[in-house]
Length: 93
Image (tube, rainbow, N blue to C red; front, side, top):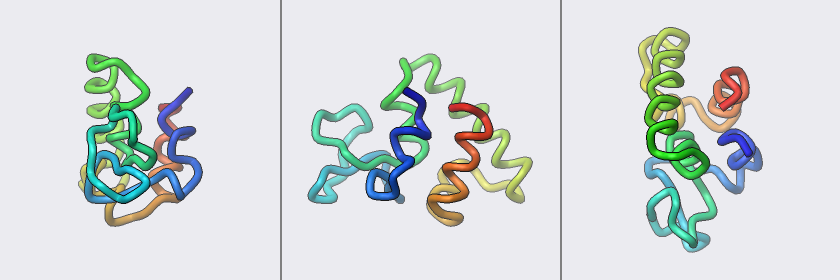
C-alpha cells in the first residue's frame, strides 16, 4: 500500500495534525485507532521510519519547488486534499 491510497478517500484525510481517531482526537500516525491522516501522517503510517523520513524530505522538496516554497504540511493544510493526493500520486508515495 502507498500513502496516497491511505488518504485517497477524503474521509480518511485530515489537517493540522498527523492523525485523528473517529472522534477527531489527535493521535500518532501508527496509533491503533487512527483512521484519518495528513500527508505526513500517511507516509509515517505506511513506511518504516528511515523510509518515511526520506520520503517526507523528497515530497517536501517537490512541494517547495512546485508550490511557491510551501512545505508539505502547508500544502496539506492550505491547498487541500486534491492537491495532496496529486503530489503523493505523482511521486508514487
